Image: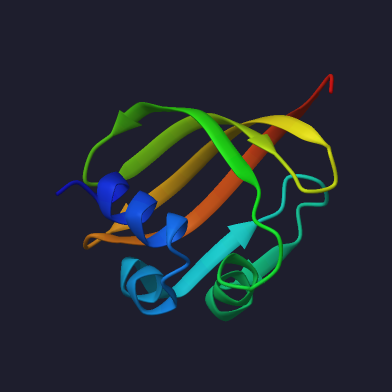
Length: 108
């Protein structure tokens, strides 16, 4: 199973343990809005919360190998906002080490 297949399964089910196994302990997420960084633990808390879950549509894997994963998707947020999101995750030893996204607001 590819990294993306494992990631998608864990992310969709909000499986904290599975997501944690896919991320390096030094994982960093860079927020596209501010450039600020979030830790592995902060991201796991956000990704596995019990709150409303955004709908992810039209996921495309642009490129994936042992070093990098590049995806594009459309996300419908519970707030009604919609974005086209490009995600890039650097991989090391089969785990995510750094992730950045870029998003474009879409008309509702």
